[in-house]
Amino acid sequence: MITNLLKEVGRGKRGARDLSYEEALLAANAILDLKATPAQIGAFFIAERMKMESVEELEAFAAACRSRAYRAPIQQGLDCAGPYDGRKKSFYATFPTSFVLAAAGLPVTLHGSESLPPKWGITLHDLLREAGIDAALLSREQIVKAASDTGVLYVPAEEWCPPLKALRSIRIELGMRTVLNTAEKLIDYSHSPYLIFGVYHNTVFERMAKLANQLHYHKALIVQGMEGSEDLFIERPTRTYFVENGESQLHIIDPDAYGLLTSVPEIDWTAAGQLHEAEAVLQGCGHMAFTNQVLLNAAVRLHLAEKVESVEEGLYVCKDLLDQGAPLELYHKWQHAMMGENALHCRTT
Image 1: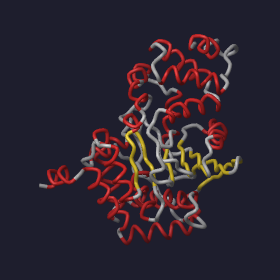
Image 2 (image 1 turned 45 degrees about the horizontal axis):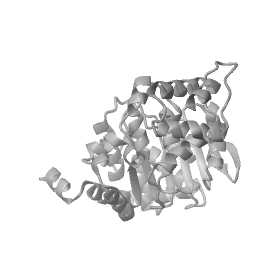
Image 3 (image 1 turned 135 degrees about the vertical axis):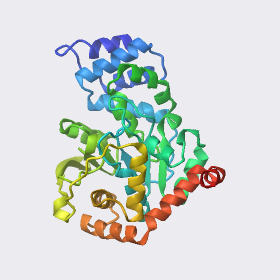
């Protein structure tokens, strides 16, 4: 079956065609259930990469992943969909930003895995491990309890969507992005009405905007952020697409418009360095560039999720929260819940 579909997408630049949603779903089911051979799966991924995936193909793979994942309306808020291949050159602003948002009353869902190609960067998994948390070893109940106590849900994607783990070795052997690099970010584990989604190239804006509409998010912001992440730049404007009610429009977010434009220091990032700076921001002693970046990202996300009337109001709310220490308190509570009583005791004695 997949052989016939592979012939359609693998005929070369002029002969290849996009699959219909129904055809792409057949391919996705065969791949995620490992009913196709590793050679067929690899060939399909490469052919799609060369052809460029259509909206219908991406939607089918996202739907197939969703049907095989544990998904529940644990906390319906904002889904932060960043690249699972991590960061190499930029600050992980979305991590401390999540605790600012939760302190402001907006539940946040984060998700990720061990690093993947093509970037092989530092991931949220790495940051959590530096904080004493191995999310892959935690029970689903413990993770959900931490989320209910704090408003921050972190999903270890390969544990909650097992086919992603099963396909890891093939993705590593290929060493390039595949359709899964997009689909895994759209599984929407907690049925969030709001989405912030990072892209690397602005050429995919329109496709991703259409896809966000077809996946029925109430509102979405597609961000051409740092290293293809969902994080806005603080040293220059960021191109974004705002999506709502079947329509989308280009929106440039300029930190200078809010008095936040800041030069960013060059840092050779490690997971330990990322965690240290994230905690420093929450403690009120972080570098100004990273503090401003967290403030801007948090304010824009609060506005997207209709928690504030404007980005300016969001900035005021977020700065006050940081000054009062509420996000730091939530972070420590979440860390405690994710580590468990015994692990935390061992780490601090």
